Length: 346
Image 1 (spheres, rainbow, N blue to C red):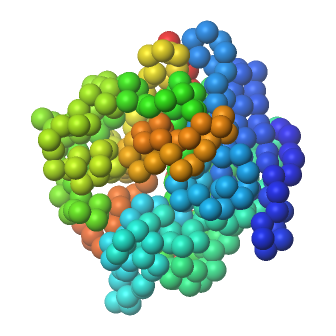
Image 2 (tube, one colour):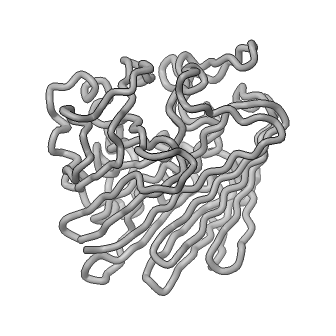
């Protein structure tokens, strides 16, 4: 593990860059601003490494970019409808930063915080952040701990949190992947398999309607490996609402158990990505709103669908859907979840 400076925020906070590498040729670089994964190199079938996550070159770019490249997301990942929710009979109003809705924690979510870092040996990095009671409208002081661990062929992310008051919590990482290498074009030929037999349809604001719809017979059926671009242009109401895939899929099996949620392969390089998680759901987002305004590390603009996200999570808008699996964290209890990104080549 190495450490170097990545700049200073306008508020005078120093931001550091930590790089972890192993003998398998996997290297991950993380900055303390947003707990952001800025680089992730893995070898293809030819043994040559490529950087497979989208990212930016400077701290200044990360501070103004609206796409959440590689960042830790909280206090509540994804959307909360009408930027409000009720808990124990009290209504909490949030920042409306995505139309009428609140997205990824609000105007200053965890992606814009400078986290405290502590190496744990040579292969793990602990990041901590304390979100004050009332920050972005959420109740309770939330103490968050995230550990990135570089394993033999995987990056493991362990999330933990405790609160002083009952609150809602949904933590994830928002890395955009392109297994051919960032800046190498669209991800439409990537083959995706999701171990998900249902998804949550959305309304025009991309808020779940409350329905759990079977994927069978729809363009959302990724139960067998299917190219991202195979059906993305079909005449389907949900695809039109999301401008493509930007939907929450319900992972088969029992939440809380570590199980495989997704597997992706890229035909040219042979790279593979498996996602395992304890979370109940996973968001497939294929960069529909990337528009070329962000220039990546390689100097190439990130156009539409040049990266995809697999965000492990609670269901979107759960605080307003009492029938969804709970996102409530009670005072005195501990939030815990694990996600593993496993890499390979075939």
